[in-house]
Amino acid sequence: QVQLVESGGRLVQPGGSMRLSCTASGITFGNYAMAWFRQAPGKEREFMAAVSEGGAATHYADSVKDRFIISRDNAKNMVYLEMSGLKPEDTAVYFCAAGAFRSSMANRYNYWGQGTQVTVSS
Image 1 (cartoon, rainbow, N blue to C red):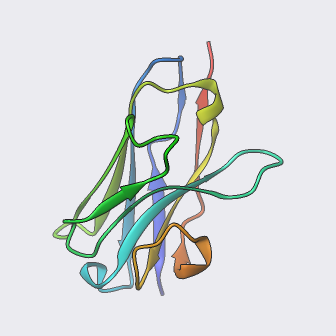
Image 2: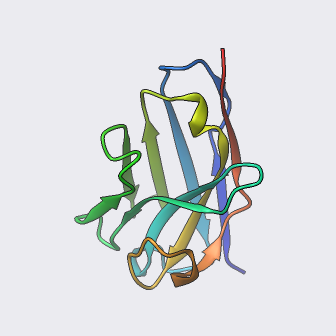
Image 3: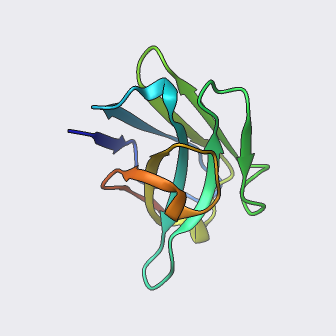
């Protein structure tokens, strides 16, 4: 059974930083590209960042490329999203996803976590 479990979401003040983690089980983690998406209330799921199977290649949404960093540790079956300079508009549920190919398209990912809530507010 494939499971992706996100953690690390919390309330943070504008300008703050946070690291999200996602732990994978039930898959050969190193065979999958990993990504982070987010979804705010009333909005569509939005691509944030993706990393290749080995971790060498990454790409980001324009809205976060100077503030977020995606990384992975294949020995631990984990992917991370380091977020800085957080803004109220970053408030959303953040999901990690696993897929055969690195992509910004949600439908290219086979497995999804349940999400972790990030709230940016003073």
